Length: 256
Image (cartoon, rainbow, N blue to C red):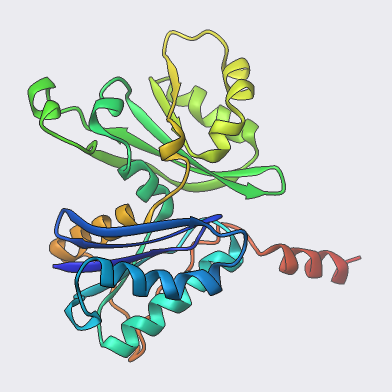
């Protein structure tokens, strides 16, 4: 099954085409808030690079967040329009799960939990906790991507809230994401010496990517648990976790 993945939820825009577990073509770009201008030509480029026509795509997948409010809306609108035009299923994918899915098995084999992080602005962070399913050394040696199960729903809060959640679990932890990368020293100093370890992913794990979005959507479609809209127009909901800044500012002004 060929799936086209779209990710515009962060500062990095990416598009990918997968066939089953095989990535046929992918592209990414640090967009500098030009998501709407960048995503359409990237879709065209990646589909052609894969040697396909749009008529060969079986489903559309999109990162629904958390992330930048405008970015999420651009990606969802693009995916919905494409799914409607091609009469294809549309699958919304959790961006934090996509980040966790990008962790190589060899990297995850040394930890118990993986915590993807996304900068939520206003000094806050979005995160979720994923348990690494260790299936034995030989089985893991044959895997390229770690097998994980999400154990906590995505949340948004201060870095202190994140650290409290990690202390409560008290398990060997791998942080991934640009937020954790930039706050590495703060996190390390705040957690201090523990009986369990903390580690940080490399730069390749700083952002969610359309490759993982498409791969996760493919797995959902095979399991038959992908959401299907009752509307004639394919729709998916954005994972905002909190109100947009404009809505918060308006609410504060109206109660002043």
